[in-house]
Image (cartoon, rainbow, N blue to C red; front, side, top):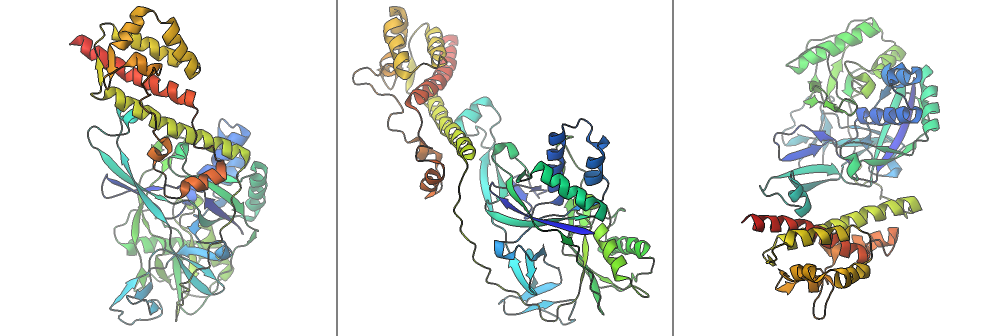
Length: 518
């Protein structure tokens, strides 16, 4: 059995939606699920080999469908100094006093620990020390924008809002593949051929979410099982039983029964010490465009006492645990390790300082970033134009306003420069067209004079700082300009002119129709 470890760094926000108690907040998992990693790599392989029926490809079947490779989740590790350690979910037996002066492992003591509370989250074990790890999350407010008009204005007429939570960029996650010996070499070969440098994971991947940098670590033999006087099975990942269950004891019975069959010896099932929590496991299959059926599972961090009758072959126990137990083992579910009680759990509260590194972006990345920024700024231009055209400042007195507005709208599609468009309006438009444009007033001024910037007339958006309207986080503008270029947030004057008047005319046409109906 081989263990192939890797580290992911999310350079974009990450969202792995979880079922919530309401429809207002969409929460995210605090780690990267193994199923997401498996799906992303399978997608890369299918695209690289242009497969129509992937399951017919022998290599694809061995790596992604046969169960020879288990794709474990990637848990947070906080910083590079801890990437050589083992990342895991906190065992549910660990408790800490409210004043944070004492930590106990309930598997090692039977004392009543009033005034203590369970430790939650993740930890990294390195050089015999435990480091508690937190993930950085943020909540964003979104408005429901179902109609075309709402998307342009960026607001909901009905006032519908929802919140979603995401993992903030710049965090490190350590994951692994557990592969049978005959599949490990094949997996390495395929990863090298595909030249995996980044994976796109989670929700909203088409909206600048989910990009993670991928770095493989040296291959090593899977860790040997160490046996002691008192043993517990620690769930590294959620365990999904094959049968239905209501009490955790029922799920534990099935788990131990499966382990008995693998080892060929009997396991005690009565009077066991169990520390467990349950959760609902679901997912989304992109190929099918459908959600997976939700299943109840014992959560990662669950501890189940293990009492085996007779001599135990440690290598056989190790193989059974690493093969995975229960359902969904190919997605990393059902992974257990042996946990031995800690007489004096010691946590290192002060984590190594995160190293700040100089970020250097490639020309292609800079080019893409500038396109994204440009589009975001133009959205503000369109929104401003729509608001101006829908405001009470626009008055239409022309009888044939619809025709002239559509003509100007078409002119903005031409791709001509601002000066060329103004020249056409002032020189080529006939007297009737100019009269109709003059009969359309914005803030009391003739639209004709505003379009050509006649004496004493200014464009409605003159002086508007489009970058300020985007509302970037404090200090981020200079940082982005440093990374991408000082001109990253500059818009071409001709493009702003065409874009503003194009969307202004579109909405003014709608108003002219309504007034014509009246």
